[in-house]
Length: 79
Image (cartoon, rainbow, N blue to C red; front, side, top):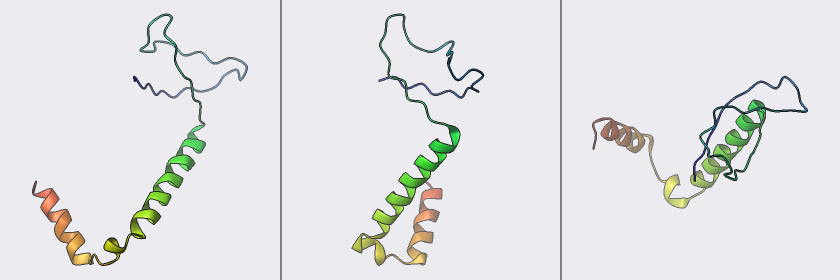
């Protein structure tokens, strides 16, 4: 599946023109439109839910700040 994302400003709410899209003539595509505010809210909500779900895992509750810092340092060293 090819995904294409662009930002446009609506000049006429009864007509939206997309130009230079990476699809072929006759190809069927699905169009989903979100306002920038809605997209940020949607993504933010998904992350908040993911964080809550992750933090509710019993094995996560036992992780210390020192272990987190050590993991970050190891990642930065490429380990």
